[in-house]
Image (cartoon, rainbow, N blue to C red; front, side, top):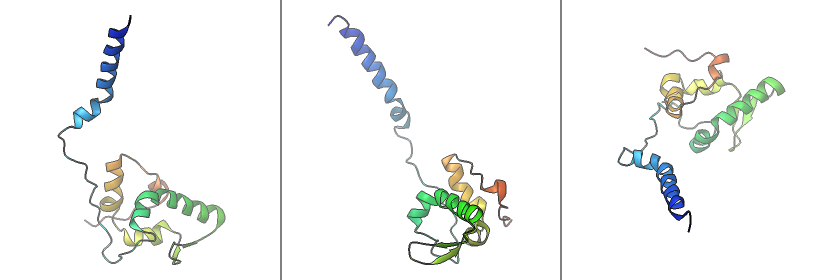
Length: 126
């Protein structure tokens, strides 16, 4: 083992660097999902809560393409119920506060969606 000492030292340094994020987070509080304001009058979204958490951006992109490119304005969900494909008329009818619903998760995730480049955000109640 001509280079044994150097290899072992390199492995120790490598493992220390790879495990550094774990050592920095040791003892810190566990992650909590942001608490968003849910609609008061509606109990069900167009799809399940789990589906919307995981796929809402893909669904909104599909809606955009269907409405603007294909002229399709009706969405039929997994339960067979029909909805109008419209961010303003469907989504924002229930989610009236961008600040208390959209922004909380997007700020937590560190993403800046471009929805509001084209759409008018709902006016926040003061």
